[in-house]
Image: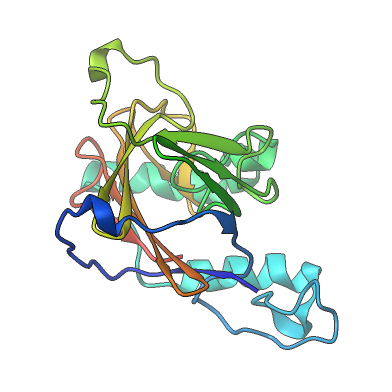
Length: 225
């Protein structure tokens, strides 16, 4: 079974079109964070939760993410806003209202369809993984981004991909400010810029997302969950 692992290790590759990897496939599994619980139920074998149950998956997943020391660092003037959003999360978190997870919160794709000039990312909807909008089309034909001032902000932004060796780099701009980066009140501005890196390691998919938002963040944030 193919598994998807999320890592926060940056690796530089020389640009080499002939080294492009084939990322096509169904990528099942879980992240490297949290325990991998064994279960007799094949549907929940990889759930990072006590007893491998769906109920504990939601509870424990939240605890694991909150305990993670790797958090986005906001400018001091936004600390109070973060705290208020966190305290009112049940009402404030757009995912709790079944809105799209947005990029990068949508996480890694569950399936990839690759062609010479584009890739299609397909996602599993719940939870916070593309409610009602479970796909992205990533062109890799060498086009440039639309000027930011000409883009209407959306949940997923405008994504354009290119290859650096066997690593697919997906560069995304043109967001609205409606989604969160994660639980905890981690909002962002319309100036959000996300760079995702995906590469294949055997039957594993390595996914990494770097978040840049100079309007609200003190420095870029490399997600590892």
